Length: 212
Image (tube, rainbow, N blue to C red; front, side):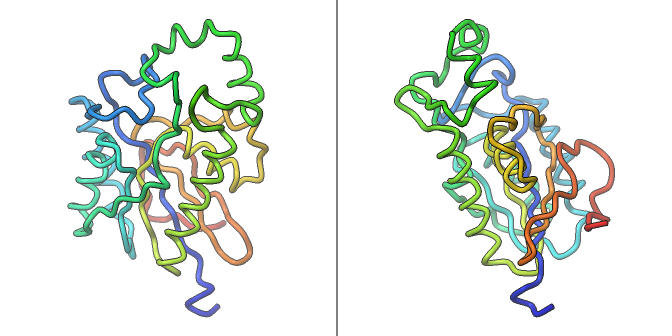
């Protein structure tokens, strides 16, 4: 296999916990920082990732919680964190900042959970657009790092959508994928297509990630 055709291993990391995780749909609203627990999570995932060789770059969504999660990873690896807008959270439009309890009472919530490919957030992004954006961002990132390992710190829904795409799973089923805070989901991309190595990994060694 030539260098240009060598697989690229992409480690997708969800940001750490914030004071509103599991309570509010924060979306792209600025000013949301990691909680003390989230900072500790970020340090732990940085330690796990530091055991992996050939990490060539660390990318992050522009939002504070993603950048704060990426910072200790970058320090552990001696890499500057590169901001990539394609890794942004979904644009939840008018639903941004709403409590999950209130959103679950909306009739549209069933569509969000059961048929997300048909749903667009009011004045925001559709799940299909989000998935296309995230997959395109990963394509762009990995094209710059053939045969290497890259870390991409993003958000739950974009990572779920990217994992579903790599698995060949329809977007309407992507809500069945769980992506916990500071979990690692690893996909190896090559000319033969993607291979999903792990999803929602929250503990243990990452040093031996490779196709079986």
